[in-house]
Length: 456
Image (tube, rainbow, N blue to C red; front, top):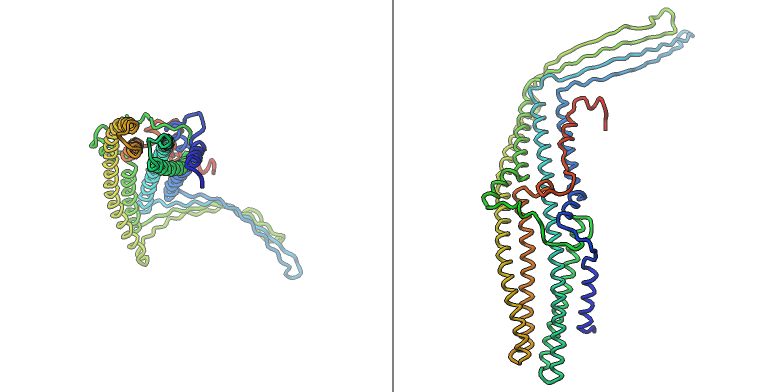
């Protein structure tokens, strides 16, 4: 069986293996920028915005003309009466079709597509907030677990010193075997706790690498984003109602549902379609008595009016479904307001609670450090026991761990509040990145003549 000292040495080796070894520090801003640029979830959301923008162009095509050209040829032959005869004909033409009135259905569908594209944009912003908040959480988890590993390593070193001291005191007749056994037991517990901290650090590092794309190196809990925090809870709630992407998405959903209802109701109305064509033909034959050459130019123009009377209940069902979707979007909007409000209040309370815990923990750590020093002196004078020293150190370790956790919680709660108010974005944080925006793309896909110039 391995000795306690061997276990402690092994634990220390694991610490050296898993603590960051790079000399270049990685700030929180750098981690956020890296995740914003490389995270696949955010890239997927950006592509969804582009895809939704294409639906606008598709809907706008509903009342735009379609123009096509055609060219065809025909060859025939026969051997009737022992004589070979053949003929060929060619036709060319241009066709034109356009719906010039559809009871404003296309207008409603265009508005619906625009609302859905806007909804997709806000969904991307929500994804952006979730990704950035996950990065903050992963970043601070690595910071916290690294500090815990260091703290528990120091704790192991302390217990090793106390074990050696108890053995020395036993040799000179000032201690007991019970003191030695208690120190050995506490050292074993310290080594186990240290190993658990290393395992947590490994998990935190893996999560960090998942979001940021690189291994963490020399992270720090300091950041410069405190100025973005609203000064009061009411201000935070007001900001959230105006700019949180979940609320903006809910509003866009209502617009899309209303436009969908208008489009469904437009199905009851008339539609007018204009069509026309112009073409010419050429005919040739081996029979000299047959007509040959050009057949002239011909064309036609037509207009049609259609009014739905009965469609097997499909029109009525589509209207009822659209109305239900409109009601559902309004109910979902109320839920979104409540969820955002809850998130703001929870994050605000988390900051206040973490700040109070930090203040309390700092005072407790300072006091307990003096207690440990005093108990050690009393033990040396025979007024306290080794167990008293071990218990005092355990209490100090608990207080220090509480301080580390409270510091982490305050940073995470700060960024949670920024997310709850809709301000956790690359733009608001001023990240050194190229901002992902599909606004230019949306304008491009609505260019009516783009199809005639290029097809990507």
